[in-house]
Length: 281
Image (cartoon, rainbow, N blue to C red; front, side, top):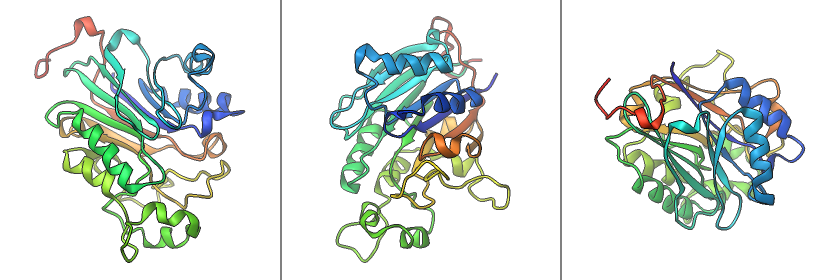
């Protein structure tokens, strides 16, 4: 069976929307799910985290935040997990690193949420993520990276963005140069944007979104048709990617201000005790 991975920013802890968020996630049946903006999920001995994890039938690995909101990586079967731990760096939000066993070798999954306010800080956070991965091995970085990609003309969407939010996406002391540094750092480290390589980023008229924020009814005035949520893979993962798409419609339009992103990989998870060394079937 192929491996389905998903990333979803649920907006400030999903207050009053957790049931809808769980239904959105469960409908995609992810094997690995990266969640961001888990406000208060670490409190009361992780009660909210357990509630959402139980609702989607997954096991959570939570990373508390240094300054803002936690993130988590959820795995459908905890027996797949080789190791799990937060990345110990002063992220504005947080990052969690989980290694799962597959038929092609261990897969490292990093779920992250980069700083929304400072491109300089996002660049450093991207460097911390890149330093924890080997581009020759199976690895994913998933999450709300709060950064526009360097391969697209963003002039019109930034023009239509309210001025008070526009500076978050522009290089300081330049004449309107778009700040894409965090994505460029990860691309330079060998990561491939699966939406571009295996998705529908070059297609129009098929009804699929090419942006992740905002949704139709979830708020998000700080966005205007912006792709800020990514699934990035090292070349070995990109070669195994069947598809990558933004999920929209139905409850995704109000469950959060971000749409989830889902990718399908030609990998099969297996119990860690039975994991296969890389390069063997």
